[in-house]
Image (cartoon, rainbow, N blue to C red; front, side, top):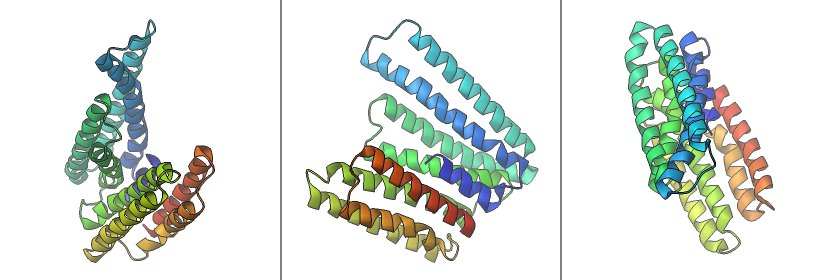
Length: 246
């Protein structure tokens, strides 16, 4: 999921910008910092014992990752044109705030609750417009359409995986909730297209998604590994088609 908005942001105008290319490593480093610090903070909150040196290693690596991420962001800001810096900082600020909210929710043990998860997905999807903004693209409806495409895929994937987890025990309810979620996602995309946020042929990127959902509900993967491999191919197809459209 982390890669999809970055690829779409580069495809939408960031590929020719030096500033934009500093952001993918910065985003990955923030992701690594999250996974270094949050598990340690969870253990502290739950008062679980840890091996000697565990807290120090987590803190040190988390600090290193965050410091390197800030350096990459600073390089991107320096390399961006004067007119691009304001929009870039605006989108980066919103994405960072949402990421921080999700990190706090993760520490408190609510990472898979629907609201924190949605907040985190919106934050990740904004990486696309952020990269495009650093390249000088204005933050307008078409720029936010990049985030809409990524977010729609994320929501589809999450709803499908959650339905898969419940298929054996509650097949009818799982299928019903997944279908309703995808109808809501489709309605949102149609609304975004009607508002002019999406380019023509945007729907082509979701053909693999629809095929995955329909076939996956009818013939579920045998295990989690098969599910992950199928999802990887769907993500690759979706990203390739969406990037070509952008």
